[in-house]
Length: 322
Image (cartoon, rainbow, N blue to C red; front, side):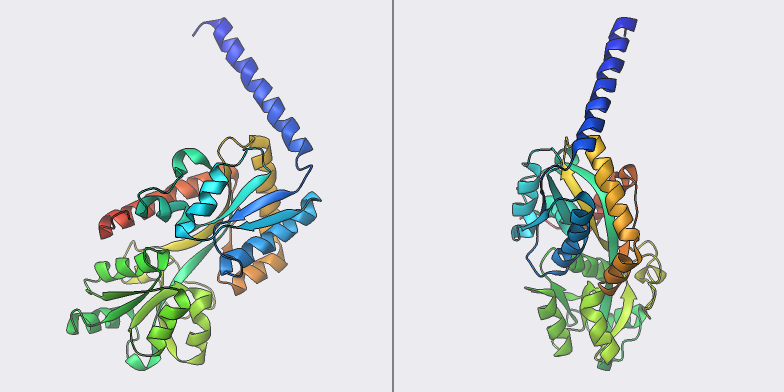
């Protein structure tokens, strides 16, 4: 490359940087839409509204939550990636919609590698494995022993086909050679009800969806899907029994690719301040979410790492896109 071409490229880069900074200084001058690819009232929606309300206070502009549920989050994700990349449309994206949907649907209508710009990690949300308290199963080893003693007859109540809890349970079954018989249910509460009724021996769900039943003594937690123990949860990581096992939920603020870097940095800084506050930390902890304050580059690296983890999981389980 000759010196003139190099100077032109540097000048262009400086110009783009200046424009990005100017855009960030002027932004936001009107309300911001936050697309949430799940239904109103769901746990991700509640978390999105907690964050959105505080962002509105910081920005002095409304944050309008736009719920787009259905089809693995495809309506919401496709609306997000087709929005103008100007910072006035962002997404509150759960793990499954960002990394599982593109793998299990033949036509997800978005490409996470080219269409998305991870902005900030709100938090991670590990899962819990629970069995009936009356079953006598007290550990992952007990579960494996029971399943092997009753081949093909131990039901796993899976909340929603190809959801993260479903795949996490299948991963446990495979890791332990358990041969669990998977029974898919429409919603996580339906799966929990099946275990409480004795129609299944195991279910997997987010901590909040199971903790009440564990505390009441009707269910027993035999493992959590994080690599480390969770504060206040009397259950070991599955990885203590099956090394390397990890399957966590998470939530990120994600923008359409091409959103000005200065705006992305501004949103990242504001989200991190919000999730670091004691009030929000407490509210998220009540929902089984553990906040993170990632930089933009760290949020992107986390997204890519989770993509790889889900791709390996889906491949190992032989899940075919539908």
